[in-house]
Length: 444
Ligand code: HMG
Image (cartoon, rainbow, N blue to C red; front, side, top):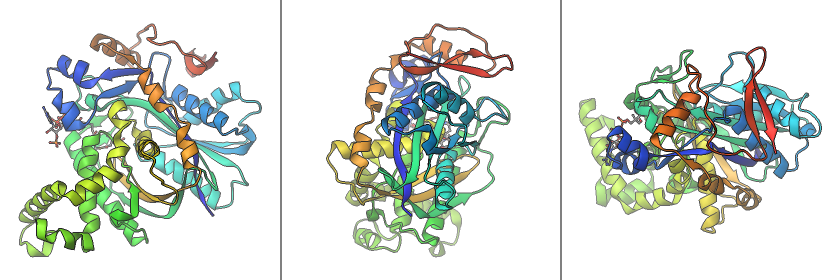
């Protein structure tokens, strides 16, 4: 059965923080850390009336309306998030409550849940929907899968540089218009304590270690994918979307992944005259010397035309949106897929039948690799997205305004702030109910 993503919509927080222009000077930092080091230009942040529910519901409404989906056609609503505000009632019930306000019919019959495993849960929710359809339990209905997060860090935490807020809504169905998912899948998963939120809103992070853990789990997932029958030759893939906490992380992961995948292939042989053969562990009597040799080989590999051509074609286009929005946690890898396909559309690349290698990751820690095949309807799907218009119309915050809006979204503060933007035809946060629940309304 051909099962995958039939369509998607991306919804960004309405505010932006200019990282090199506003944030770096306020922190006394060199703007080059953002533009050259992390590869980030602006962060998306939520206005006072926005949160994970409004962004998820707004992306979903746009998607269901555009695809002309009736509530009866949806059998499942799953939300992936690591910014949930309730340990019992899932965010998907709030999202369905919003959608009930504007659609004829209800989502009463739809199975709802919430997926948690840091950023990788967006892909896990996609997997759940895929498995549900493959198992024959969908009875012709589609799944609505939404990845939504306000990726905020405590003020002055190094992670503050990588914040973001937004949602990606995906419709998962048989005979999809956008991409179908591979059966083969690779997992690299180990109990780690590099990034976690033990009953707290903002994460405790060991930033540098989190980067090492990301790379290690990604390598294991690639090995597992190959063991499970997945093709890992880099030339097989037209795009390689990675989980993108910031583009600089993906640059490191892409080089390691490419090196791993070309070992013992004709690509390694072709590069031998230029940079030698890849070091092998059995050629070294201790690990440190081996790691030094690998580091130096990877540096040389990144300078080759072969690597740079591959990177420019398959990875660089996937970073276009991330540079402007920061980390969206569960939505991040799905933003990368969207950006890569949007860039392909704009440069008139024909992707039908081509393969994407999708590399998801969540701290704590687990990487997941699967392949996707682009479907004939992809151009129409991608053409309908308005994410670049949304990005252009964000309100640009001063540093003082940024501090104020960060406080508004801090669960330990109780500040009120006039919104910076005016909502139109969208769901907004509308105050608190009698049991402490959050209330939402649709404004015209
Ligand atoms: P930091 O200490 O603020 O930054 O931490 P830095 O000093 O390491 O600089 C960052 C890069 O900019 C470095 O590049 C610098 O050299 C370079 P690198 O050495 O790594 O290649 N740089 C410059 N380049 C040019 N001109 C300059 C300049 N200055 C510096 N003037 C860190 C950075 C990422 C650790 C921090 O932002 C952080 O803790 N972030 C949060 C954790 C994170 O994003 N980890 C990524 C992997 S884990 C993951 O992806 C999971 C996650 O999404 C959560 C989940 O799964 O739920 C986070």
